[in-house]
Image 1 (tube, each protein chain N blue to C red):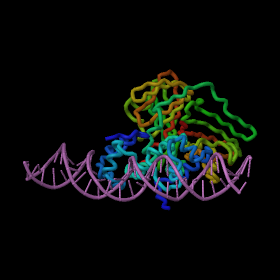
Image 2: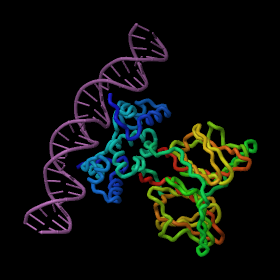
Image 3: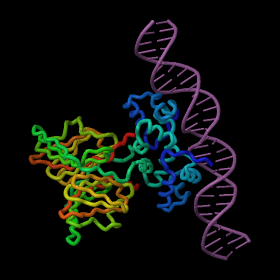
Image 4: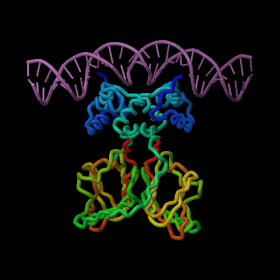
Length: 195
Length: 195
DNA sequence: CCGCGGCGTATGCGATAGCGTACAAGCGTA
DNA sequence: TACGCTTGTACGCTATCGCATACGCCGCGG
């Protein structure tokens, strides 16, 4: 009996998920098209499955593979302490006021910011930044007014209360086409993490 | 020459990442401890690597495995339109007022909420919900007052301006130990997506 | 007592992942 | 033309993944 060294202890996790769904090895085997003995070996860490079967196992557990493997994501809790207030941008010319609510960030995981767009103001130019690191996600909530979001050439019209989520590594910017200030709460989260 | 059907087209992605880092097959092979021919076969989808070597490849690309596989995450843009205002909870007994800012959500990807905690109030009980689906992340920003966060028994003290990120599938709750209202902006994002 | 159904695991065999090596093609230099 | 040196790929061989099958174990009903 030799136990292989794990890239990540996926075995116990599969076992836990299977138990939580109250499936036997054979039940899960039927659901995912992987033999029961194989499942047993994977759960006990006696073998390293190929991506193909790992993906089928994930499917049987109603997860995507990257979700099944998501336990190597690092610290479960990270706190960034408040520091001096970040200045915030205020561009009277364009009518764009932005305020980053989160403290500056080593090992950045998330950033909340609040934007106020005067009538006809926009965040950056059409092809410019804001553009975040590959894999990051942005969620924005329109709190007041009307906003037009341009992503990669596409145009979306949003009104107060609308919420949009998109891949933040695409070029994107917001505009205020209305005649009142628009207020936008934006959250950028969880991009790739290099090293 | 037979091409296997991919769980997810990881091959082209590896190739793209390798090109972006300007590494040859042998360079990457040295970095990650996987032979160059193997890398070539994986990139072209001629073989499905084991998790062990996939993880080493990911390591050579300075990514975690789940990050390397993260391309099955779905649509790049999703908009949830504003609907009627959600009522929001208001519990005078406990002193907890909560307001969910995002509209109700098919295919929920993110939820922003704003919590006001009167002195000595708390969000839920110590072991209760709020507890979100496996894999989800929560980021919270203390806007006013002082807050104590309990996660899985651990206790963290936060003051205005602090920002915390943690795995939201752990049991957690916030308390206000101060003598003024505490205001908390919370964002839950990107949990598991079943099927 | 036996039999029957379930459970997880040991066994043995094809198929193939993963290695070292050897190869063809594309560069710049002589 | 030949030469080094790079690039990515084809060739064999061994380790092992992944399967069907068989086994020991336990709880239940006869």
